[in-house]
Image (cartoon, rainbow, N blue to C red; front, side):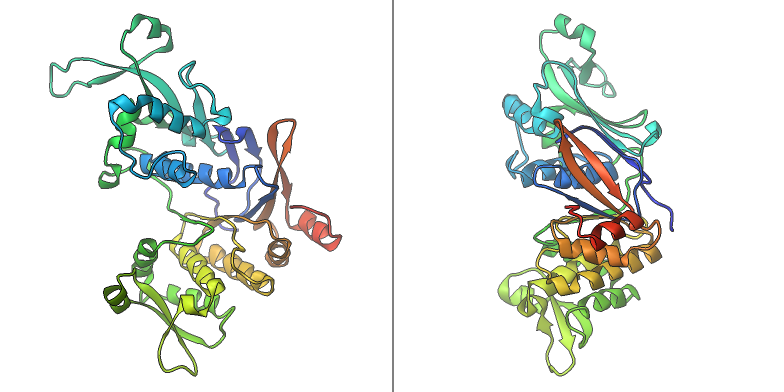
Length: 373
């Protein structure tokens, strides 16, 4: 099996996870469990880890759950709104002002490669020299001695500090125009939400693989549903005529003109998005929420075979969630040796714990119809 970006995973203090330890991960990992057991939260933790705590990713996570407005811009006077927003990321949504809180995400027993997101107090000081810092972190034992305090965030990777500032600067600064992270290289990663990739992301990813052999992998994915598929492209004239994003179209044997993917059904568009993201995540992570969304049960096995094949060749570590037994069966029929792992998350006495099924255990479970969802 190819080398894994994450051979194991530990998450502390994030969302539903007080302390989650997954001792062993596979190249392709299928995450299952009842509602509110942290499946989506696990994908979020992996996004944070891959992007080294990027402020833009933090904002996206909060906005996706309506925990912050899409505007992302705040003034210093909005500090309480900021505190209410950011506390959703921390386990138990505790009072962040009472004492510092920390989120940790990374491989087990690898402190140097562990992402740390911590709350701290800051105070503002006059700046006498251009290179002096305006905002200073206040240590916990000095809080009572400082009159003007602002709650803030510090992001680090191991012993490297990547970012430190009050919350209003964390949310207001235009990080999309800056290089992130300032230290500690991020990991290539792509997230495919349950409702699919947006048009801008599709266009960007397609430009990167255009006229390369990777186009054939995407076509092979589409042929799971449309065996007559011959060529694939994105047309710009539809954007100009209808004011839309670039539109994926498919050339199909027996049809003179290319056909928009969406007109051929939700399942084909879903396959396209997953296949495009898969070939674009080389040497990185692919995160898929509700991998079976929009797909008929009869294509689940073929989809997983494509994922395993391409993930092996391009060294992509895949994490996907599902509620579907058909998806689990398709996964089990495609997994070989140590390549795949089914991870069931369940709540026990208020804690989220993982139950691991390797290829052998999963084969027994599916053969005997043992419920693993």
